[in-house]
Amino acid sequence: MSEKGLFQKIIDGEIPAERVYEDDDFVAFKDVAPKAPVHLLVVPKTFSPRLDEMLDAQGPADVGALLEAAIKTARANGLHDYRLVINVGPGAGQEVFHTHVHIMAGWEEAAPLG
Image (cartoon, rainbow, N blue to C red; front, top):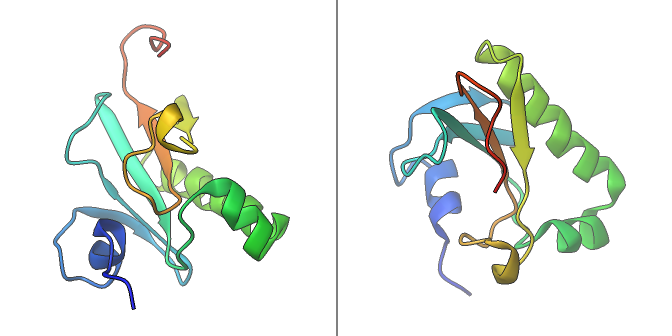
């Protein structure tokens, strides 16, 4: 059996995180190394290492549910203008291999790209 990853430890309460949204299937918390004034992470409680593997293993309904959870998280945190980012693979910047969505917001001007 493989060792639990960082996000699974957060989901299981073994590592503290500032949770900002949770339901039966997802948990959202503040990023500890934010790249925006507001930077939240939405993580499925069911493990998949990458979004494309989530689609293959669980189907499009679960991918849609992940986006729905991201929107619910944004709304629950009073965000109206925000960016959703999903990095798929190390070449795209994915650092933690547990599918997740970044919600980034809070810029005073238009959000910078990149």
